[in-house]
Image (cartoon, rainbow, N blue to C red; front, side):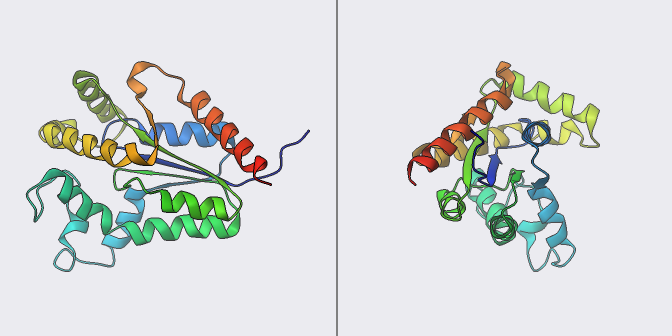
Length: 208
């Protein structure tokens, strides 16, 4: 029997160098999801309209020192400034019934987004990508430099801060029951996420 269509939302949170961009494209291709959005893209659009004097948080890195001088609070400032834009992208896809993958370091685990998507008849999963082993994380940052213009040294020099932010994101996600994946372990993340979507579809159908 053919499954009833339920729009999919996949939210991929996580710090720099954990594989968000790569996995988002792979899972979108595997599940035939045509809309993939990075929070970096949302940030660039906002930067073009808002200058650094008006919003310094918008124009600095999530791991650079902000007004709090605290890794998690300063990361939250950078995330909060993008929250309306992130929600607008998700709401548009929800209204249109279009599958969406959204990924980025600016995503703070939040079940309200998932609840609204499910109320619209879709299925949604929040996943935190992380790397448990520090050396593996460093190597992923270095290997990323070969595939992009991003200088690994910039991230490695702030590695301790990035790791603290990772712990903070995991702490936010734990009570909300967000899924976690460490790509450095060799796990088949596509199979895992596909299975989670199947479980969510079954759960949604049982409510009918």
